[in-house]
Amino acid sequence: MECNTRTMISPMSRVIRPLFWLFCLLWLTACKQTTLADLPTVNPGAGTTGVPPLAETAVPGNKATAVAATLQARAEPTVAGSPAGALPTPSAAGLFAARPGEAIVLTGADVPALAGSAPGALVAWRYAAGWQQIPLQVDERLEVDLRSYTGRASDPPILVLTYASAALADSDPALDADDELVFMARDAGVAMPDGTSPPPGVPAGPAVTITLRDPLDPAGVGYVYLFRQDGALDPAAGQDYVSYQFDSGVLDVEGMPGAGSKQPGDASGGEATITTAYYSHHFAGRWIMDGLYLFAGSLPDQNLIDRFRIQLAPNDCERSENTFSAGSGYFLANVDGPVRAIRSYFGANSGVYTQRTHLFYDQRQEVVTDLRVHALKGIVDFLDYSPAAIGMRYYNDLNPAGVVIDGVPDDIQPGEIGWELTSGDPGSLVMVYRLASDMPIANRTSYYEDNAAPAGPPCTGDEQVLGASGPYYYPLECTDPARAAVDPRHCAVAYPFQLSRTILYDAPNLSPNDAQARYERVQMPLAVVVGGS
Image 1: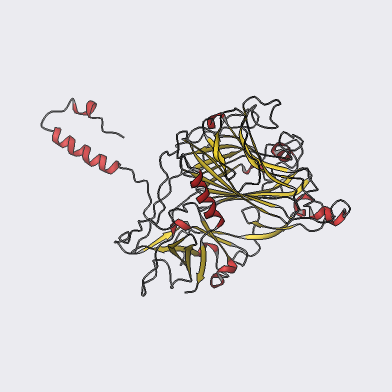
Image 2 (image 1 turned 135 degrees about the vertical axis):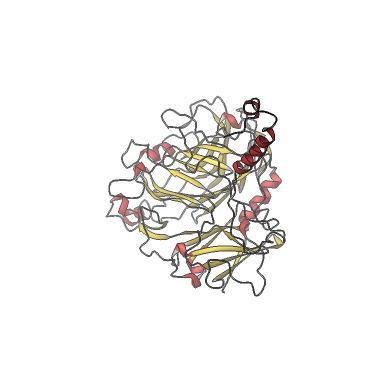
């Protein structure tokens, strides 16, 4: 309801008009909307040390953001209510302000004092002139044999650690050595003074004290305290940094987790939307990421990518994210937590056990690809941008001068890259790469193409190739342990091959110097020291 003074006051007499204004004032005060949840603070003077109270991250739109895109229609995802403007400062002013997207991930083995605890019984707090609860996520993990999905009983065991979910429960529901505890580094506080009483809802003192130190900044020190609680507290502390809307209709009749497209020719399984206060991604299929929105810049409602593409070589259409999704494949994990979301799947044509895992944080994504396949001519893993990205500038550590994404071919220096930057008024993406493999690879290089009118149509997506860029490795030896066990003539050794891509979703118009600084922070994460109570 609104107080419409034009329609309500005109018939009133001067005698009752003052009463009317008093009523309106009271009504507007009552209608004022509060958008940030109050977090528990013991000391009413919290914030006097320079560490402000933790503010709730505003996720654009509803928890489950509606997306009307379909792969067949090539409709664009629509994202509701995208916030624009500069990225907010970290929750703890001055503590790790240069690392706003960095998460701290501990295993159960790192915190033996908490072993055997129910995940929901654990909470995290920081101290800032008083106790303030911060979001903590506990992800249970378990070992699975990928053969249980494929039915290939003659293969040797393919054992991987994955994340438990509603469809795939850990046999040990308590915190054990391989489970993970996650919180954001920026949520750390200062050291609590000696003699400080525990926060409300916590029956005993800190079970674990976590000290964080920045190896690139000697003054960068923060503290987080982990407690067992009495059941009255929400481990998420009323926060939800990441929203993951997954198409659960792809679960199979046996309840296997997210079967995706089990039958060749069916690429429909696995549509999803991930939304944070800083970005949103859309998936049209298991391997098909076809949407990216950056909310800090000038085009928060426009999709900036055509595809996140993967091929055996540039312009080689034999295999792609389309064929991977159309072939048999399975989801291992779909987790929507308060600190991060997890999407993990496997199955890429003859790479039956090839796996990709996405870890989504509110300002950062980790994409981890494990090849398990016969020898390949190569692999090129790259982003292809949409027309909305025209005018942005592309850089990498070999080409710090950069080139404009404009559909006009450029001649840039190829080679193995450590980081990439795509920057402009719509926002900035910094991408950092790490390859874990002892395979002898003759060519460790990169791919870049910017051509609005290529000689032949691209393998997937639209008809243009705009700022397409990413790492390129060729040729590749066998990486499939199942093949090595039965065909030593063609696969004498199954080499490990794990490619990690860190994506930072950042403010508009970053420079190559900014990208280099972010690269160094990714390469040198915060040092973590775990102490007892």
